[in-house]
Structures are given as C-alpha cells and as structure tokens.
Length: 161
Image (cartoon, rainbow, N blue to C red; front, top):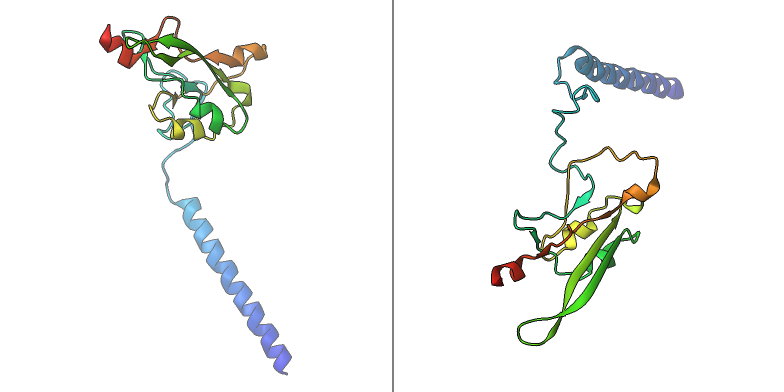
C-alpha cells in the first residue's frame, strides 16, 4: 500500500512539472516579443552587427596613413593557430640605435578562430575586430590579408617628422 502511495505521488509531481513547463512555454508562445531575426540579404546595406561581434581583424590607420603597431609580436605569440605573422626589420633612429619596425602584418583569416586573444593582448591597441562577416571566396589565397597599408608608419614617428 505504501508503494502505491509513493507511485501516485510521483505521478502527481510529474503532472505538476509538466503543467508548469507548458505554462512557461505558452507564455512565450502567446506574448509578443521583439523581432531578432534579420532579413538578410535584403537588408545588407543597413545591417549592423552587435558591438561585441568579431568579424575579421583590421589595423586602424589615420588620415595621415599612420598606425600604432610597434611590431612587438605579442599578437603572433598568443595566437593559438598561428594565423598572424609579424615581419619586422631594424631601422636606425635619431640616436643611432637600431630599433625594430613593422614591415608587414599578415593575417590568415582562413586559420583564425576569432578567439580575440590577439586584440586583448595588444599593448598598443593596434588591431581590432571589424563588422564584416561575408568571407565566402572561391580562391583561398584571398583570405590572407596584409593589415598595414602600403607606406604606413608608426604614429609616434609621424609626430617627429
């Protein structure tokens, strides 16, 4: 008799949780919510991704074609997939000392996992994620990008010129 009573209590508890779940589900079903679905590709021109969205990497440049990348290589070292390559060369400064200078900042988009370690660890905030998300190409070579623009120089050096 005690076993039958426990059995009926478990059935009652199951029905109670079922009705609670159905009440929550019907509340979401019948209440109006804001539309979060985007009508892509019809709204391609006006589509704005969220601020925390991680598109591809870019190196912001000023109107004078200057950037803040010192070529330290921290982003290259923290990248788990090796999708960043920093090529530097030595240049003599005003004091006659050889200093490292950025030559080419290569980004392999096809290898990137968008973890964001490179952006978080950059001491000069030289690279950021942009809002682009359309990366489909027929040629895989197009996914390898050079982030620094031709002829660009370090922002600190531009002030001295």
